[in-house]
Length: 379
Image 1: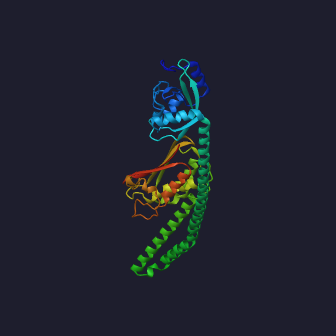
Image 2: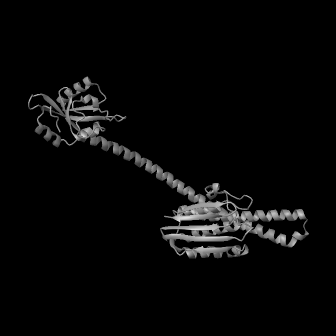
Image 3: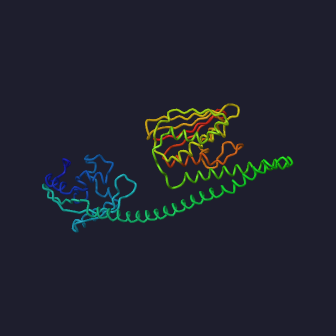
């Protein structure tokens, strides 16, 4: 709206502002703002109330980074040339705007005959500048994307080579380790009685080291499987997966007198059956390994959820437990909560990697002397 004391023809201004929908000002010959449209207020005085007339009577130089005399001189010269450019200050913003082009049209007051200037932001120039900046940014992003793709391809190639090497190394080590373990067992059964006590103790140390090496290569092989690129997702009934895991460790569970309880595992979910089997057998093996010798082992496997997209699987035992302050580190490779017991520290990190590949969340918690609980959640 026009201020009441503005000596300007309202019809002319109305038509001008309708014709130029971009940031526009009406200035007198001395550079004072008589009226401006809302787009101009938003662009160059963003903290003024739109349509409030806060800029009325203000010298246009206040919106620029130039002094008053230079602005008035530039406006009058620009009136003859039809355009002018100013470095705008953008109101209260800290960073100045780039130089802004304005088109200038001359008007005349209907009552006093004063010369007035209509400044309209040169939207064509502004659009061209923005398109140029966008093209420059697009070219830069295209180059960065190409570099990132090349780096990602090299990384994938390196990871595949590492996975293949780890799998081959762990697999090839099994034969000599099995040979060594079998030879030590045969020697111990047939010749240990004829050996002195010290020699028998050394033989026991060698057999224990061979078992540790066999366990380590087994877990390395499982870990290489868990990090392999291919994952075959299928519909898996959790009850069947739990049953297969318990069957594979039936002898070990029976030897330690474990009592296993299973609840609510009828849910069907999307998973890689081989990797899920590794997770469940790792949980059960840990429960057996870290059981409390003072009481019978009890393992509880339970599952809650509304379907294949939202569920929580819990595997709890009444074993030795661990310090709850280690519940995050225990899922990292080679971290062992009980160093007095044989182990490699790879099993739970393998479980964590498998869960990550399934977009599941694995958490661990425990209370020393009372047991541990591992939870896998989806959704």
